[in-house]
Length: 231
Image (cartoon, rainbow, N blue to C red; front, side):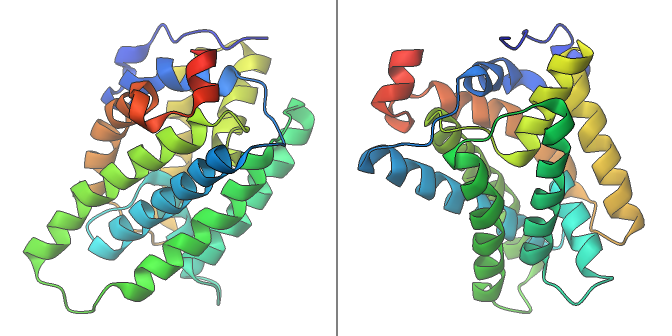
């Protein structure tokens, strides 16, 4: 069943790009990919994880799912990246009753983003001045947006979180924008209560990630030949 386009795109500015994401998520996931498409997938996921790491490293506010991962890491002996992988696994279990089908990008997403996040945090120096930390916010959001465009445009399956959104939209019939907002607000609240960082970076992510992903999905330089053919 194809994903319906949202009729509540004005719900939050981050949903500006939800139409383009819906088209990407509606594509049938695949398990085989040629070297160029596979390279795009891996580069996109690494960029995504790098961007999440930059946001966490800014200490000025994370994306909603990283707020939850950081909150979980504060109460366990695992890192933020490892918590991201654990959360991805738990979200994939929710796919079972929703009858969502994974693809190559689904499992790659679940594993690689958390690794890239931890690597990025390990490379960032300590004691960064406020101006440098603030600069990490636009850099992080841009990296996540470009990474999303690369990996979604490969049409090798949605990530665990995008698949949950798509499955709930399909099962409930609710607008995809409303489903996404409900999931992210719930995750954000849970992460904040666990001690995850919510701040200006979180707000900037909510405002800018939708348009950024939309641009990345539509830009011909960032799409594989397969995704251009689908479009």
